[in-house]
Length: 431
Image 1: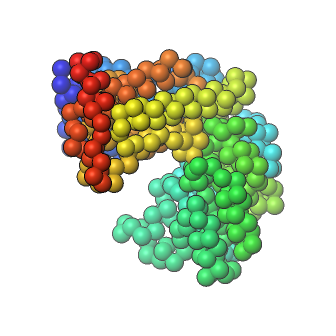
Image 2: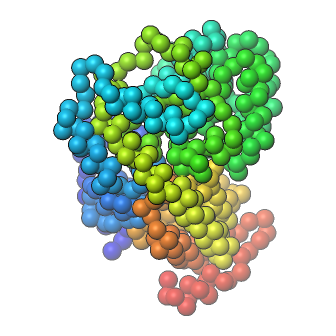
């Protein structure tokens, strides 16, 4: 069966969606490759596995872009949420679980003393920026990384209000001097410097500290956007990993293991400025997602989840790099920024050949039941195991071998022609 035959139902659903949803998809649902080479619709997930609308099963390393630290449909987490929902998950005013949720978060983030709850990472980062502006009396924000879909995250787009480009500025965290120059140029204007720690890779405490010191030197608050990294690093966060204390931290994704919940936490001196600020939405007080988060936090601490996903990520990265070397494929695997968030990047100097290589390898890997994203970091969950990591490496290795043997012209670069090792392997295995 050809790859295009694997995704017949997905393609039919996509055609139907084009009449119902602008663009035919929500943005995170963009095709991994073209619609003949990758699935578009999934129907269910459990543990580390996911099944598409055509019935194909995958070991999933996308994990819905990161929420499932413990794996899909975790029974303990989902049971906690369901039991809370049976009592009425959203009541008219406040609920004692709101306090338990924040108290538990603060125990995991000792630099923080107060917190506010939300539903999504975009809401959390937007709230943190708003709090910083009130706390400092300033307006400008220096940002590095993806912080969500709200207007301030997209200041130059034609669909947001004018004027944001005079308030929102981008710096390169890998070169802290770019931040210092920006802050020097507009002294006294910046309310906050916000950083998604995955933008510093490989991880460097020296670089992180330089960013924080530059912010504080200019009277700006430092916001660490741990929406992606929270609960994944050793000791539970990148701030603990680095041994630093942000002025505010934003959390979501893995926090609820698939249930929508988010938070902004920080020291009392900063968070007190949020009192009375309009940060309200109808569903912020939903307690089912908070019950899921409390269960998630308990499981993570009880089962040593960070150590598990770290080791599995290292195994995957090492295996992929060995496969690339063995097949002389210009590609490298690495943590973005840490092993539980791995990625495989193709590095051919010719952009056109690089795109072809990437597409060919990923299409074969996906067709063999390993769901890897060609453009976005992946996520290891505690539901993955060493055998599944081994299977993923085996499939990628075979795909690289086949692509290298059948497309030797794509591998030529700067006068270099690869040896015929992949061709010999392909002939022996009948690929």
